[in-house]
Length: 127
Image 1 (cartoon, helix red, strand yellow):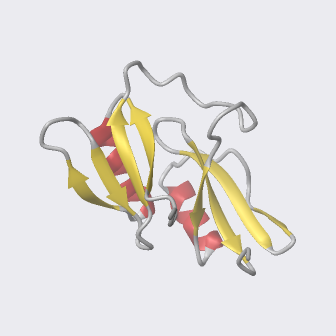
Image 2: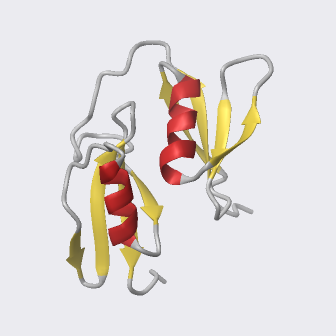
């Protein structure tokens, strides 16, 4: 039986730096560091995890939001305005300003490797 997604992996030219970015900017915690490689697992307060692995090549930069493949990670927040302001004040690069459509507020941004993320506040959860 499939129970859900346990983690998503992100390949980074500098896994330690990227893991620390998620800790400093989004409040994740490092919950596992491999003793035999540069793999780091970081966990959000809801238990969702990212596995940060070492990339074989340098990051190509920011992909387009509609290019093929995994396009973004949605970061659930309870107060989008305050998280947006805190991240913007910390120098995080936003691709869009916050916008609200049908009760869902989003703002797209990138992590320090150029991976696309977005803050998300839903007025009502998807069922």
